[in-house]
Amino acid sequence: MNMPAALVYVVDDDPSVRRALMRLIRSAGHEVEAYGSAREFLAHADVERTPACVVLDVQLPDLSGLELQRELDARLPIIFLTGHGDIAMTVGAIKAGATDFLTKPVHDDDLLRAIDQALTRSVEVSKSAHELEVLRSRVGRLTVREREVMNLIVLGLLNKQVACELGTVEKTVKAHRARVMQKMEVGSLAELVRIADKVAVATNPHHAVGPHAEVSAVACESTAEGIRDQGPIPPTSAVS
Image (cartoon, rainbow, N blue to C red):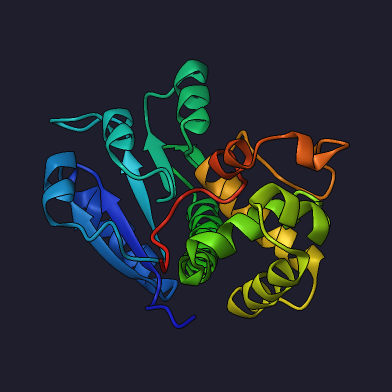
């Protein structure tokens, strides 16, 4: 995946601090944009761009740095700078997703190291989001019946059990299963299960299918409608 050069946002109300941080960050080879307030940042920054991170002062004239953090997507890494930090503030910021909390005056090497770590995290998050988008697009190729078949086979049901659940014959299930494998671009059931897990967990972090998910000992005793409603792949646009 081709991505633009790394961008570092600086949000600090002190012009001299902004200038010094911009010079330092540019010297490390990064693009940089600086803002004097949280609202200016929100109004003008392209927060969807990646890889990127924010070097953010805690004390700002409008919204505080901590308040701005709550306004931003948690996927955008934040490095806090403050001259008035305390343990409670640091813990709160880190729990809310900040990658670092540094006190002023900050050593150049410490800040650049924190920026490198934040940008690495941004790249990883972007790659994961891109991968998930690709997987969801594959799920979207499936017809409604193919998704029903996929939901059941990743739970560990055999073709004949799937056929019983869906009120069809094993030969038809085999045909659907082959099309599922082709459209999902996988070569094995294990790979299909891993994809199903990724898509399901991204949609519902408390739900995972996995190869060890509980399956009824006698699959035909459960209702097909119940499994279709609670399958591991959440509803998305599908080919009808």
